[in-house]
Length: 336
Image (cartoon, rainbow, N blue to C red):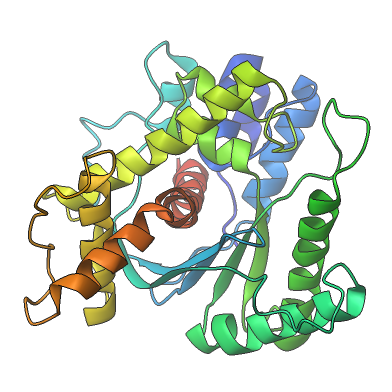
């Protein structure tokens, strides 16, 4: 049952800049006129549904050769001190930096798949029949067995930015996105799992509010075109990996393993993060959280495989964490 917002009437007294800041903190688009932005916030407040404590959030970073997903659950948030924590309204109307914190979560599943080899050779990959078969197998064999309560799907481009032709690969990924929504709708009705689209630009803008790298997406989440924009886009990817790697390598306990497999997975991620860019043949450190009974050759191979997956795996986890915080910010805004 949705909460009745207390701050709806307050929106009318806010400046356009403050309204845009609120949208950024709640994962809402901040483009448009002031009345449109105010209406967007009011609608989000009226339709808000709290995330249950037992939520299992499946976060999907779309791709055909790099389909990454993670299953996380939010850890209970600690109550903030009213004397030290300004309200969201105060933060958005002041000149101070926005409170862009992220929640602590438990990681239950985390993987990246190459979907191309899973397509039978006799099928034309671009045909609707082969894509439908691929999507159905992906959902039934990998995703629904995780029993998610919320499913987040990375929003894909619906136009070609400044490019005149629409790339065939873009059409294929768009088809996969649409079929995922349709398959989840058919096999996991809203009463069992809620499905939502997440725009990459909104995630980037929340995580790096003062960085120009967040602007490497155009307004609908498409990576911008041009050498400079592409360099900034790669820098954004690198910053996400660095952020997640430092959390896992440190003692912040922001991401806790939910089982032994995830403890091992997090260890491989840290090892790959710390060894990336180092010379081959250099002696590697002991993996974090991994028992020494594994053969060294298998460990090195797993770490090398992990190096190429760092950015996609980071995207899926951070997308889920940011989405949880958006909802907590919206709930906090409603209660103020």
